[in-house]
Image (cartoon, rainbow, N blue to C red; front, side):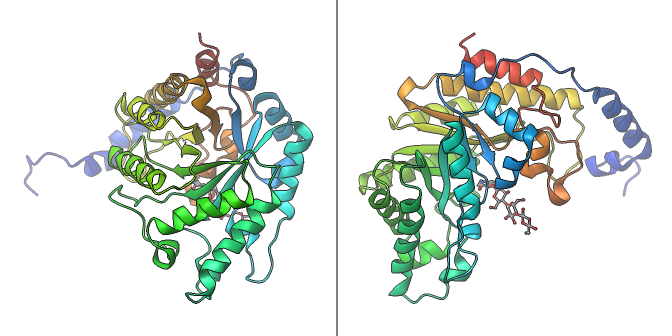
Amino acid sequence: MRSDAPLSRRTLLAAPFVAGALAACDRFATAEPAPVAAPPLKSVAAFPIGSAVMAGQLDDPAWVALARREVNQLTPEWEMKMEYILQSPDRLTFDAPDRIAEACHASGARLHGHALIWYSQGEQVFSGFDRTHFPRAFDRYIAEVAGRYRGKVVSWDVVNEPIAEDGNGLRDSHWSRALGADGYMIRAFEQTKLADPEAVLFLNEYNLENNPTKGATFLRTVERLLKAGAPIGGLGTQSHLDIEIPAGQITTLIRELGGFGLPVHVSELDASLRREGVGDLRSRTQRLEQQRGRVIELAEAFMALPEHQRFAFTAWGLRDSDSWLRRGDRDDGQDQPLLFDDAGQPKPLTAALAGVFAGR
Ligand code: G3I
């Protein structure tokens, strides 16, 4: 490599002196913000505040106390999905989702069902069905599950993540290959409507704010499905935010979602401070500022929707340590993607969010 060649970013980051400086900078910048006072989010919001929940968390008094204080809607994080319920082809397992439903009933929290049909689940069991039995099994699963929670859930994510990863077109899946690209979605909404006529039926997707191409494809898909008669009753944007996206992108997406006149659910908010893959020159302070900017933009965009379209504002967990982003090999114990710290304390972000919801 020529001696005067510019150092590549990777080489620069690997340089000991740079790495040492960054570590010192990060250590200095990791002076945690002091806990702040913030009113319970559900007490200042004119719409439900939600969180993901796992049945095991109902045995954690600290989690239960925080949930009781802050939220009035719960979404089963994974135990109301096919991966839990359909653990074997010939029997359905409902102990955990039933427990969550009972907890919601006991506490008066709304229950949002998640998720009936998802590309990433069910293939192993459904691959055993031929062209005749596949549709019957599809309908039967929805009837069994949505029927069981009729009167217990207020809503369902009927179809989760139907758009291709890059946003160009629809995602290919065992569902689309068996029942058609739009067909499986229309069928899922129709079958769910039959099983639970009162529930609000959502189409739910991620990266709509982060990837405008995906957002545009989602909007076109909603328009096409509605024209085909699919009983879509609400639109879910998961809001797993990329905090480095340009200001304004979130506002545009939420406004366009609102254009259908349907309830909008911010359904799985988290805002990771981490960046996948490449080195990260940002200080923790800079990342916290980016996170605040995007989360507050989301809240303000949600507040700008007509009241009847503000379905709920749901975070994908309560405490940072509850986040899926802090599990497995992703976890360096440093990420702070949620609204409460590992000890369940509100953050400056939480207080700012409460201020937006209170209209201040
Ligand atoms: O808790 C059990 C543990 O007892 C068992 O030993 C282990 C064996 O695999 O599984 C553990 O359960 C895991 C569970 O997360 C709790 O950690 C499940 O295997 C695992 O599949 C499950 O992953 C969930 C994932 O969806 C798939 O269902 C994540 O918690 C959940 O955060 C994630 O949520 C998704 C939304 O549904 C859709 N949008 C994206 C979002 C994040 O991926």
